[in-house]
Length: 252
Length: 252
Image 1 (tube, rainbow over the protein chains, first blue to last red):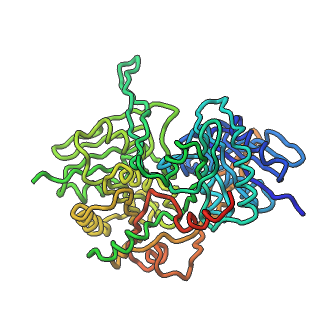
Image 2 (tube, rainbow over the protein chains, first blue to last red):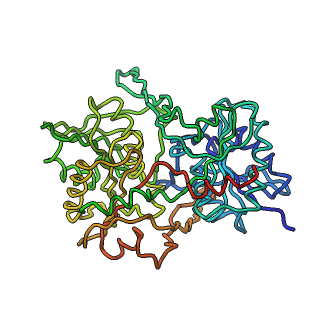
Image 3 (cartoon, each protein chain N blue to C red):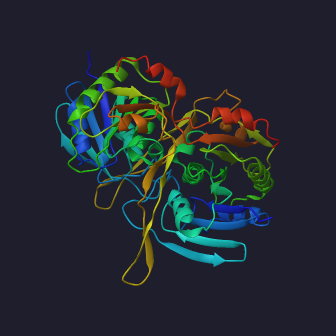
């Protein structure tokens, strides 16, 4: 039987430790192609590049693994891979492993999840992985069994079109895998105001995450805090169906 | 009674005709502040700027309207406005009017809708507006009554936290307003490959939209094609609740 074909991207760039670990975790079970940004693209969400052209570079070629870098966003990487690089539809798109969590509303800003959602839009089962460790030298080893379990399950059972998985893991030992929903919350942004040498002000985005559901036990935020890896099925259909019913009663 | 306070952004830039029309449509009913990118940011989705600082510039100041430009994305504009500019919470966030549709899966890539979703994340009722006309000189006049009706309704009835409205309108005469869901579909990307004067290849993103539900009559794509303005309630909770139930049966 032909080996499964897995397309991998991320938003920390092709040289990040997280994507190298992810590729190494799956390379014995699949033919792998990596198409990832040529540098950091954190916070790029599902952005696409429309104002300048993209370039691709073949970085590495082994028998069952090719690695390309791309000058665009994670979504650009998936689009370009599907349109100009692969000669058959991948069986799976993986994105990550992100250095830093993409729980709760961070899924909206995440370039990692932008890459996974793009796979789902194209009808390919897709999973984004993130770990609660921003460091360049983060230890991803505890995620290896989680990645292998989820990849095997998704390869055998598939996912509905337009739905991908958002997987987040705590740092260090993992208690198990739990399926859950996205917590409600927001970033409370505290921009840091500075003044440049020419006496003009500028602002750095910083801020901290505010969990709006501190007592809920069925959210990704809660499960991560208890040492579990969280799995949230994430839809590219953003319609709010309960509000849709209510809106039909408005006099518009 | 104090006038309502409306914060406006877009992704075509502060000088675009669409945002100027939007501000003019609501300026008699509200105090208005515009904080918009200093140039085009199409396709920026919910991207945030983390790798460089942002600058703000006061472009215009009238009694009940201030206009700022910002070097960041639409989401950066909303965050910076809420954190560093306004002295009270806006009653409404508006985004657009976008030059070009943001129906179906385009909501995912849209900087216009990124701005509206950011308002919803902050608990502010928010609406994104787009028209089926990419031209710089697009005629937005048919949208004036639609904008006024929706703004009045949302100001009086509010929206649930985390839900905003994605409003799209056809070019020219509008038959009415219809509430509906996001069509399934995808962009079939045809990158155009070119070769630069140094003999290196590069790729331009282009492509066309593929509606996966050509016979459905309850989608934004269908209603726009019939001459209606479509209103899709759009959630920042991307959890797929039906898949969540199914996933709980997987052996993970």
